[in-house]
Every structure is written in structure tokens, then in C-alpha cells.
Figure 1 (cartoon, rainbow over the protein chains, first blue to last red):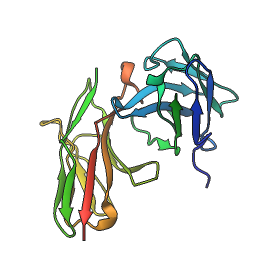
Figure 2: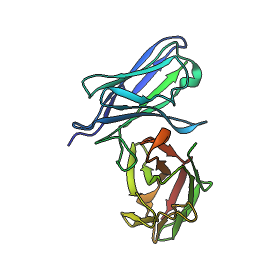
Figure 3: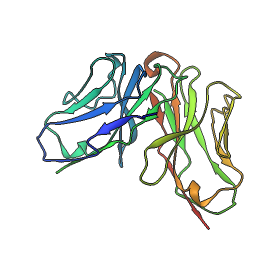
Length: 115
Length: 115
């Protein structure tokens, strides 16, 4: 079946611009997670959704970062007024339910470069 | 908060050599433990997991045992192949509280296997 998909696969933007990153989870998965992979910080958690609610936003680095999920499916991560330190690979994952027992399935990522 | 520590890399081995990648964790309660693998040019894939103490996860010849007494989840393979060359990530997922469901990753270990 179809896995987690993300778009765009690559994004180059200028400092100060806003960007939107999209994630389509596996059909039927109620939990959706965003992570960031960068050279300096490794893989770090950003936010997760159970349905359309975000019980844990603790990993969002600043108020320039926001995310939403609609219809219990697609999620969008928005970065406003991008900075060079936002350059990273943004990964989305989904699981059948939230919780530590569940396996998270990852998408291919969006590689963001802020010039 | 939760943390995961992997052995320093990179690791370079000859084909058919024995592999160990060490992983230790700190967590509140009893997390689930995972090994994810990232092959060149591909996304993160689950390699194996264990959800309670003394459980052994296994897949593709790789094994790891959840050791609560030593808070460890070391990855082993008896005979590596060139195709095992990849980056390996150890991760924990909390069973409850603020770490519920979200993955905390180690820094990753680059494995290169030569013919």
C-alpha cells in the first residue's frame, strides 16, 4: 500500500520568506508526527497530532513554526520568516495510534535550504 | 527528559564481520525501544523493536535485546554484508507523560561494509 508521502521533496527559499511543507500519512493512521533532521542537532521531535488535535507541541523551536492537521489526514508544517538555521530535512511519520507501543512509518522528507 | 546515547561512529567493517552498535537510554518509566535504519538516498525504516524488558527484536539477521538492568538496547549482527551499509539510529518512545509516543533518537551511527 501507499506509504507516507511528503511534498515538496526539496525547497530552496530566501531568508525571511514563509514556507509550507505537506505530509500525507498512511490511510487510517490516526497519529502523525513531525521531526527535523539537521547536521548539528540530529533527529529531533517537533510536534504530534492525534486526529486533528496536537497534544504535544513541545518540540517546535519558536513561534515561527506552526502546524495543523485537517480531516484527520493531511498535515501542513508552516515556517514563517525563515532563517538560515531552519535549513534541515523535515520528516513526517504516522502510526495507527499514538503511543510508545506503536511503530512510526516515515516519509522521505522535505529538504529545506534557506539562503 | 528522555535521552538516547549511541556509540561513536563511523564504523567500518569487512564483509562477514560481526557487528555491535551500542545504545543506552535514560527514560521515565518503561519506554519502547527501536532501531531505525537509513540506507543511502532513502528514508528512515524500522529495523526492529522491543516493547518490554527482556524482549528481543530481530529482523534481517539483526538482533537487539531490551536490557532494563543496564538500560541498553545494543544492535548486533553475526555476519554483515555490503548491503548493510547505512546509518543506524537507536530510539526510545515514552509510554506516558510528556514523552508519550514521540521518538527520542540517538545521534546515529554510520556503518560502512567493504567487500
